[in-house]
Image 1 (tube, one colour):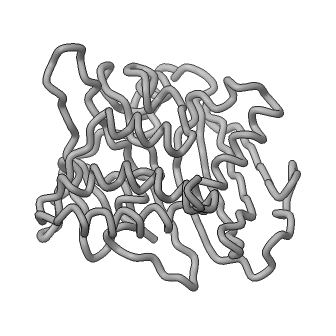
Image 2 (cartoon, rainbow, N blue to C red; image 1 turned 30 degrees about the horizontal axis):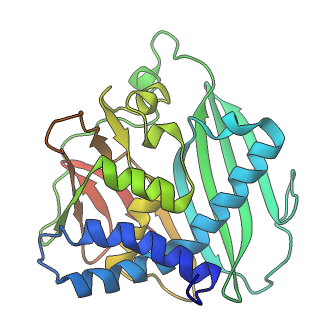
Length: 268
């Protein structure tokens, strides 16, 4: 497309979504600067997005297309791979994808590692995902929720604030290929074990990661980690009503993200 490589095209699609979010920032960026930051975030998150594609395809091949529904993103780790192209070690490895699964306290926990090539550079990417496999029993902590609402967290001074709408989340789903219903259909995130309202969806972890990486550049030579310690809850727009949004606070030093008095992403 217009002479762009597939990676360039993917970066442009992701950056287009990020630009819209970053342009709402309280720091008052120009459109040009917002797009520059958006491209930086899109480029940094691309290995994780491509790795997620391969994990999704692998799960679909093994279990069918419903295998992706209800999965909650817990962590992502990315690091340059000195031995690019080698298959990831461990059980269930196929075509450079290694998947480990365990059942614990009514949850299926999945750790998947992928060697992802991006413009000649190989990245080792590990995603940790979880899915509720049984309804919570009596006395279960937090009523069986994977994340709790959380209170008492004070937003660091100097944070930059951004608006995030369900249209942004839907656009990211289209650009990234991750159309898990928890991001698109109100009520599905709550059913998946997240502490969100019935009229809310949750933002993709990699969308939050891209926003963070756009503002605070990762190290090019060491492992970079994203820990999703809470969900970013976004109100779903009602037909004919004015669009609502969630407000995210991004620490410009650490890249950590909070929503209200809840931390939702921590950089490592």
